[in-house]
Image 1 (cartoon, one colour):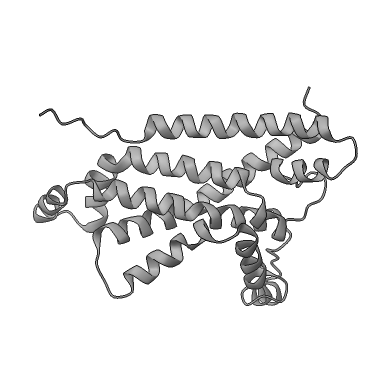
Image 2 (cartoon, one colour; image 1 turned 60 degrees about the vertical axis):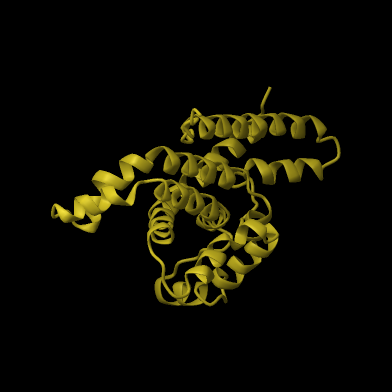
Length: 226
């Protein structure tokens, strides 16, 4: 049976995933829509930067976050000196790491979903007097909703299962370990094989449910009959 440490790790993983998703949604949707609907100088560079965490080793992403948000980081130092806020080695730091690795998945899903929306429908709405926000809210989002939700679920699952970026910036103390961090700790402990197996089963179940939900939400292409 799962122990209290297992349930604590599961709870922390879900909290990190939920926090990362809340942080990601407005940024990911805005970036995905921008990349889908606009052509501008530097677009390719922006897209490459957004997708970079997909190909970077996760520990490099974590190190970059540490450089930015550490106590002496470019952003972390002024945040601490001016407002007394710490990001690195806090729960919010773990959420930030989950958001960093989940962002490319959400942006790409939103981009593809918006590209599948007929732009003529948006043009018609604007011609009838709808502004950009109203057009997105009443036309673009309802038509792209399934793809956006699938991307959000995939980004959530990615944040829940992240290890490499999280371990660089996490407190890694009892009660603050995610499933991935707890698996690593137990695997490094003599006699921890049973705990590793239980935690791995929980991780597999979470990942399976997330992928199942993504498949159910992902828009299906209609088969064209000859």
